[in-house]
Length: 451
Image 1 (cartoon, rainbow, N blue to C red):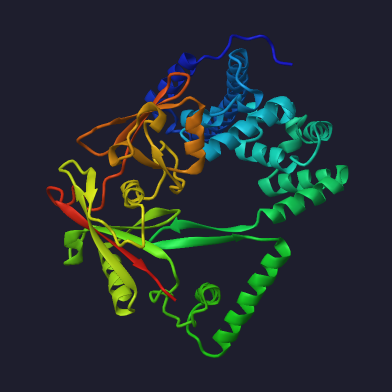
Image 2 (image 1 turned 60 degrees about the vertical axis):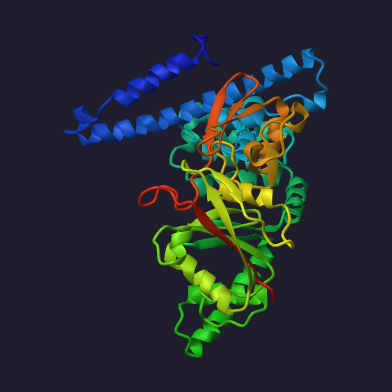
């Protein structure tokens, strides 16, 4: 049981943060041991801060729900947007904020020993998350038993790595309720899917979440066939062969061994670039697709992609995007009629395919009114933004937004129910500010790869 102490308030933390920011490690330079001690102490401080954040998040959630209950809000609607506000406060995405709030509830309500180990620095937030996640299929009593057995004493966790900790939890959970583990496995199978995220240097990670047995079978098959190609004299590496085999088998296009020759599949791709780039300029381009965050590509790569699409006979449409002198996209020429909703496409390009909420890097899924229609918000470019689904839903919990910078690049100020304000500005369009004054217009090329 913790002793009664003075409550922690934001001003105390800010003062200590400022003290750290103004501090110097000069006094430790002569003693390497002191520097290691400082690193360790700061790591413990980080864990302690996460524990206090968890308690604060749960208290905030409870206070919001109590005030909404007193105001007559239906129980199913109470607490809407709390995860989003936690996300903004922690400079995270809405989805991540909801996960952090869920973790905080588990630690405070059901796993007090794990919370104590986080508070004293024995665990970090990632390992505490593993404990909460792996016990998620247990009831409250069973979860408390695992919490006490594994985390009651700090000494029991000294030197325990992440993999070993996860193994301990899984073994204990399997002993306590094997049926619950089986149910969780079946649920996990129902969540199988495929995702795509950008990687450095114009590459991408295509990730498939499938049951372990299927994953092993797929990987073993790729390795076997890659080895067969190597034995036949193919000079590509094993990694290159397995990657090319995945592309070939998923698209049905023969494996040519040349990754630059992208397969012709029915999908719309946007590449936005300053007009001078087409003529040999060096300003980079932006590559986007529906539901995929934008990725910056070098000028030469963009020209090669365009040239290849034309030589392969892929249908392509060119349109001009007009920017004002401060870099705000203000108009576009109409696009081909088989691709409707040009305004939504403009918002997609304007945000580089990324949600406009501060610190959220999820792909755009919704075209949103900054000022809602019911509040006389116009359906136009100046009142539009691209959001992910989670952020668009979080707005319904009493958030207010206003569009700023009517002359410069689009900017939005978000005010949460607590009165906190967060400001976000749209990224600059490709070529803006590069090598002198911004260009009058840029080119957006869309092509449909038809099988």
